[in-house]
Amino acid sequence: MSQVDAPMQAGPPEYFEDLRAQALSPGWAKKVPQMWAAPRSRFVPAVWRYAQARAALDSACSFVSPELAERRNLIMVNPVADNIYPTCRNLVAAYQLVLPSETARSHRHAPNALRLILDAGSETCTIVNGVRIEVAPGDVVLTPSWHWHGHSNSGDTPAFWIDFLDVPLVQNLECMFFEDHPQRNEPAMGDAPDSPLRHKGAHLARMAREQGTVELDTHGLHTTGVHMLGLKRGATHEQAKRIDNNLYTVVEGSVRMAIEHFGTVELTRGDVAVAPCWHAFSFEGLADWSQLVRVTDEPAMRALGFRDVSKPAQGD
Image (tube, rainbow, N blue to C red; front, side, top):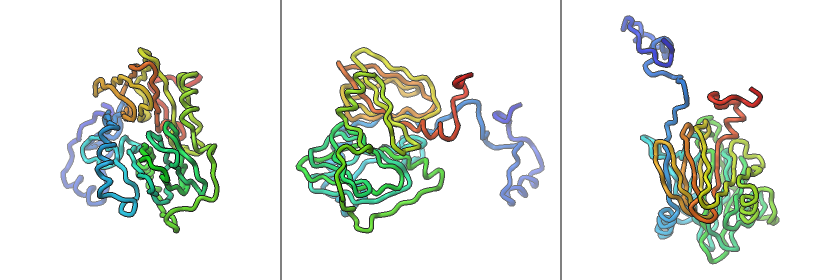
């Protein structure tokens, strides 16, 4: 009998009680198996709607200010028992709002972060390590680990975006650091409209139309990957079970997504779906043109040397 399904074995009760008193446990008589034949995801597929989150953020403006909160955001909490934060095993996502004339104060932290801009006016920016980076709808803006960053909206249009961070991974690795900027709002010492930390939405849309799928250079986000996926009406994209976790956001058009153990759902601009590890899923384009952003912890899996052993490795 394998250790995967071995039941609790009999033995003198006093023997096991003595082991517990010494913080020891018999490996031949586990109460719960600790290894299994294929991945088991604690997290489940789920969907979040931009329209609902935007309405909730608008309502929060009357009682949540930048002076009160580090960020005015709504975290996409995976709906499993006893979960209060992660969207999936290693990643968390949140909708954020910065109103006109507001500044979200500067800080830095061990987790890597990136932002997908949904709606913003011409005077919205993020300041990363003292450099002002303008942002626009469709942009993907990167904030590598331990980079100072704050956000400012000097225009007259509310700015909404989605934050993606590897906070759950950093928490599990127990290597968390966080620090507020000593000046509260880091001053901008220069501008970088073409910063390598900014992937402009117009360029990404053009690349997606030309190539179908595009992998972004994430410039030091060693744990997190970002991809663009474009679909014409009726075109499909299918993905078998995989060991990494994936978050998809529609940035243009609409799609039909089918996720194992969840069902079929239609997604439109700003909606987010999570496909945890070991869940097959597929997309079908419903508009003339649809575009999605994929955020994944695949680079972390790759860096740690893990791969899906149900598939042959390259060169096998």
